[in-house]
Length: 200
Length: 210
Image (tube, rainbow over all chains, first blue to last red; front, side, top):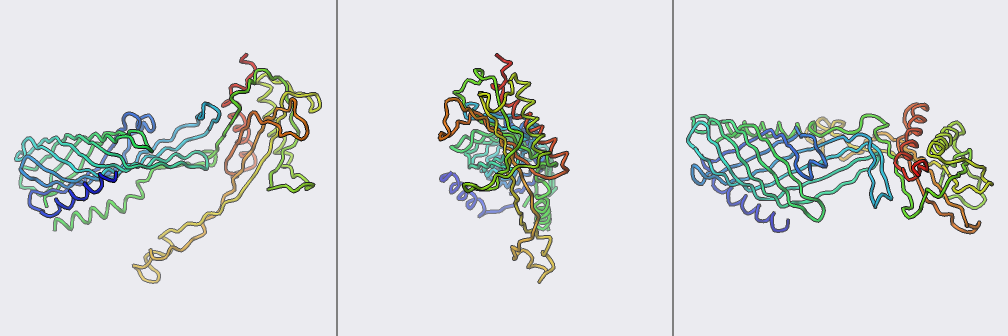
């Protein structure tokens, strides 16, 4: 984490110096589907999330940018018994599980047909994700949080970019893979982003 | 113009954030918790008899020597004791008198505490006093209310070979914790349900499994 954050901030500053007409800003509603460990913890799809993207086109087909967002996962687990310490201790009750996830990524995208009305793209996000896990059981709550190193491949389509419109549609699927840390296991989820992009 | 539009949408999204926060418990019983602990090296299948008092001790703090012990209202105590008795009997245990050398002695007790909650909500002072834009400068505590939580402890002690000066080993403990809110009958029903759960979570106590 100590290394990731300064690099991310430096890249932010570097890109913020030249806002041009090819720059875009995107705001998306995000639906998230958990995978792997995260799915074992919360299997329900999250409909609470949003993503902000900023992209700067170095060339029409190549863009670099920043992406961030906030995704809230939640699941109520029905009354059940959980054993720990080699079954010496058991806890029975309803569990309320929460995961709040906020990625901060540098994104590089390749746009296949940047001048066309329908412009598919593929890219990769590299950066960090802040994850906070809360489990409430009875009147008690446990909290764990961590900054993860994150890789996030993404594919998507921009609709209307090649036209004279200032606003165009955007849909993408991004797989957020958060590497394990000393505090939290590997976390993963697929983000479906739907929204608009603006030329700035 | 375009930037203004983005700013408005951005602020709009931010103000919607609190509404996006996921749900939590709705009912008092959703907060009920049952914890059990047992000595994993102990073979419960070698046991068969138990004794239990008809009363339930009320823990009120550190008891000085000679001070009288307080007991829970007998109506509650009877429900707790009968529920424990029923579960043990269903699990194949036999109740005997306390002086008939029971294999284990069950000791039920309770404790209750009240927690006062303070919170500050911008809605109380925000936006109109003393100036429309000053509201959030005052982290002024607003009394939110209080809740009373209670716990029932069930301890299974193993008195064999112990003298009066020894600490009697506790081989199984169950703790039921929850809010003491709602009608008497609903609290009683939740306590019984909690006791049942504590035995379901402790299959090693079932002597019928042998």
